[in-house]
Amino acid sequence: MSNNERLTYAALWYQRLQTTFLIALSLYIESGGKLQRKCENDSEQIPVGKRDRNLSWKAETDVDINPETLRFLPARKPGPQSSLADSHSPMSLFKLFFSESAVSNLCHNTNAQAARALAKGRKYSWTDVSVDEMYRYIGLVFYMATVKMSSIADYWRQDSLFSLPLPATVMSRDRYCTIWKMTRKMTKKKMTKKRGTSEHDQLFRIRPLLDTIRIACKTFYHPRRNLAVKERLVACRANAGMTRFTKTKSTKLGFKFFVLADTSNEYTVDLSVYTGKNSFPTGRGISYNAVMSLLDKKALGSGYHIYMDDFFTSPKLLTDLLAMKFGPCGTYRDYRRGFPQSASNSLTKKSTRGSIRWIRDGPLVCVKVVSVCSTIHSAYTGDRVQRKAKAQDTWRTKTFPCPSPVTAYNHHMAGADLSDQLLEYFTAQHKTMKWYRKVFLHFLDIAATNAFILHKELHGNMACKEFMEQLVADLCGVSQKEAPKQTSIDHVPVPGAEMTSDVRKIATTGRRICAHCKAVFGKKQQTPWKCQACDVHLCLQLNRNCFQEWHKSV
Image 1 (cartoon, rainbow, N blue to C red):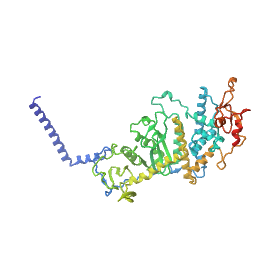
Image 2: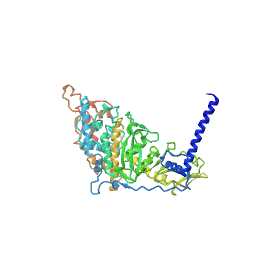
Image 3: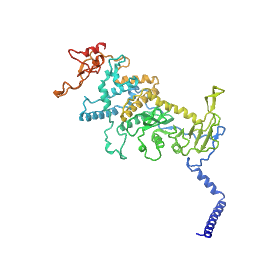
Image 4: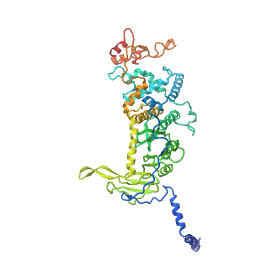
């Protein structure tokens, strides 16, 4: 193409562009500015997060609007859904979450697992576990959470100054360990054939118990207005493909739970287990879907204030929650898409301490002291906080302005942190490499903690330690006022294992190392006899009566 042809072609395009501009200008003049107003209306309908980010930060001296107050309409009366006339013993409240039907299902699957193990040739004695015995077993789990020892075997030691009398009176050590090993499955379903497909449920082992706990948490208590959504990590190093590493948590590696808690008393309202990217196949992101899965408007009602940390907060989530008549508030990450990125009038390193910056973008207000976004607060209403400040080499207490969203967030999320703290006071966690046992023990912690909170709401006259001690006594079937005493009738020699029908193996079946010979003489003498109460193997022969020597101090 020659230079003349190029110039001709450019001139034609210029004339066409000029004609289009003149037509548009004439239409605008004839409409009297209606086109401009239409564009303004269209900009108001652009969703939050897609508008112009070039907004200017305002200071605490600028006045913010008061957001519309949400009317609080709970589906039920907030608080415990139980009358004061009902029985509210620690045992009865715990059974609200671990009912006899749930424990019966657990016993059935435990017995089935033991039968399969025996069919494969495992060598140990087994009798089917009953519901009462399973409750006693759970009582011992809580007893070990209250009284700490270095190992499980130490709870049955009888040759030490620090011997504990209770565990041996509830069940033997071997029985306890065998039940612990057999609590493998909590469901009858077999999902191994569907592994690797979309129908496979990674939580199939504990799914029935998880559903039971969730229903019970929502049934027997209705939360008050302020709720918190947070992450909770249960320490576990099992290679199950579901453990997660979180650098910012005190527990770095474990199972991740998403928890909805009442900030007024740390009650766990609902929970879900994160199993991977396929946990929420809606395509909106983990943080968005985790919050939405916990907030059931039909069950909760409307007008709730939802507090969350920066893992969950996004403009899309906050606006969608506001449309559902929930008022969200939470810290946010500055680099997350949709939040203000403007540098105009923003805080710098040279800004004086106590300076506040805020931007309102529709229903969202973002404040800067720490990055907090809210739909239910004004930017600043005169709140002030006291902080230590260094002046002339001397630390003094000074008063600084604080944004309203920051004040509310600190107040309510502190209650949510107490929820984890309350769970850790008497946690039932054992060291185990089986992930489903870790989750099972966490369910026990949730049931005991929620039962204590219900008791505190109804009566308020018992500390957590006193509640756990009474719960252990009720589950184990002993009196808390009187310590269990072992009589000499309990200390009788019994075979260490069931008698076999094979005559050739009668002399060797159940032989174990004598505890007295090993402790006193350092010898590994084997014997088929053990003490029924002490649950330790002891020699019983004419020339070596370790059974008698062992019990001289009992």
